[in-house]
Length: 154
Image (cartoon, rainbow, N blue to C red):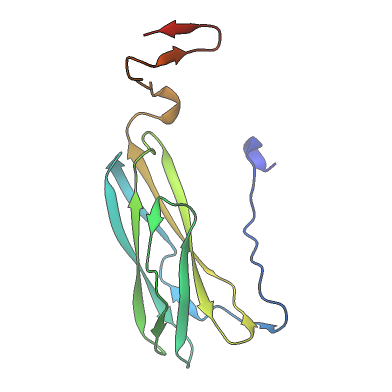
């Protein structure tokens, strides 16, 4: 457990066997983007700008979101030396009402035989709505409503 009684989950990257460890060839001016406040159910689209800081063309193999609430590019793409590229992210806020979110995105680079650490991007913001623990589920009339002690016919 980490400070304040919260669990700390380190990000572990497992590379292919063999090869040498390479440095991250992409640089992001700001790896954290705060979209502010949106209402639950809204979708937002943002783009992280990354730069190829090497003298070789870099292939972004894939962009992996931490959960299914985010989507990004699905096909590999290349960035020529010194050039910038946008990595679009779409976040779907359904089910996150009343929460402050912090979601991570890993940008994975293909480099022949080398282990390249991912470029980790973070999307943060607040979702206005009813927190999940305060929601009430409504069942159709033919269903039952349950609590911890009793069952009621509706």
